[in-house]
Amino acid sequence: MKCPFCKCTRRDRVVDSRSSGDDRVIRRRRECMDCGRRFTTYERIEETPLRVIKKGNVRVPFDRAKIFSGLLKACEKRPISNDTLEEITDRIESEIHETFDREVTTAHIGEQVMDALRHLDQVAYVRFASVYREFRDLNEFMDELKTMLK
Image (cartoon, rainbow, N blue to C red; front, side, top):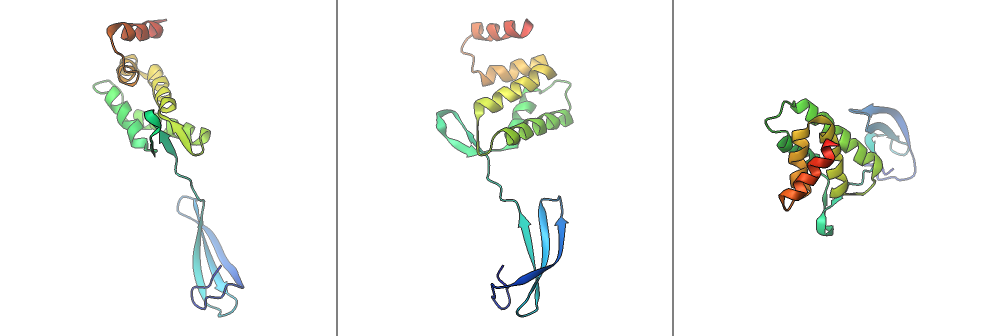
């Protein structure tokens, strides 16, 4: 660690160490052994931003708001609270971060949303599926309904 005062890189000692905020950062109070002055450093985990692979192999940053927005549109005018949609979004986001290190496909995210909606509300599920699966005609839509009714 380089002392910000004397620029010495040889020695310092940690005087105090404690968690900061949400336990994702450690605050360390250090003392330079050459000049005796104290300074503070912060240590945090280096996070690699998660990217989403869209159709056509375009990569964009992961955005949980897009999951919530899709759920919100599918559940419009349905008796489902925003808190429930936030919980589903949290669950999907957690699963994605636990399963993938760097990249996740939109197909995986879409399937997770569809699975959650299938158990939550059939109308919302059909709404989301009709957009996500891009049904071209009524027969494809009916096939999806038939699988749901089994």
